[in-house]
Length: 204
Ligand code: URA
Image (tube, rainbow, N blue to C red; front, side):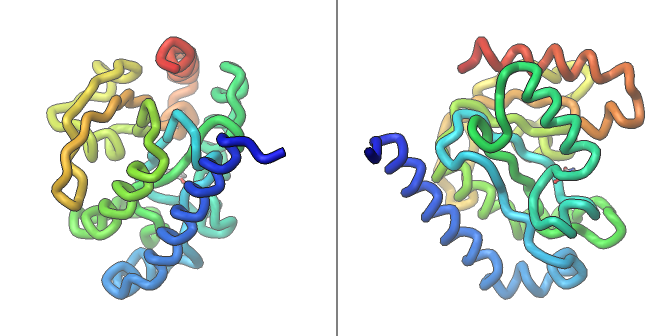
């Protein structure tokens, strides 16, 4: 039997597929350096009707190869943190990046490159309508929050008035976490990151 939830998920999946195709047909994006040097587009992945959306900055080498976000070492840590609070990557969350092609040699994307992709992230969020958006790391967080410090404000939920690329403004609940890759360089951070994941239960 098909349920209303299945239908909603199916409709959102169709809209996201249209969005994925729109990106590969966008000449400005496809002529930019990340798209020209990447192997493929790394679109978002997970449950299109999820209440939680994670946003990274840009794919790395493993993601570029697989065509899926967060599949390398940082992704494995992200999955471990999700599992420990009883969440599954495929069933309970949507995982995406602001910039959806790997920048050459993993360099930071330029402001202009971020702007090229930002409208697509906005449309992704508008389709999914999550309860909470979790930027991973200070680069992704600074897309949503001005005047932001990851060490002081990680794990704190803030309702912000977010201006979408099409000029619409809507309230979004933003709860930045450390990027899981930070725990690869500084293992002491892993406990802090896991404490932040536990806060998700009270938000949902
Ligand atoms: N880091 C990111 O920000 N995004 C990925 O997809 C992988 C690593």
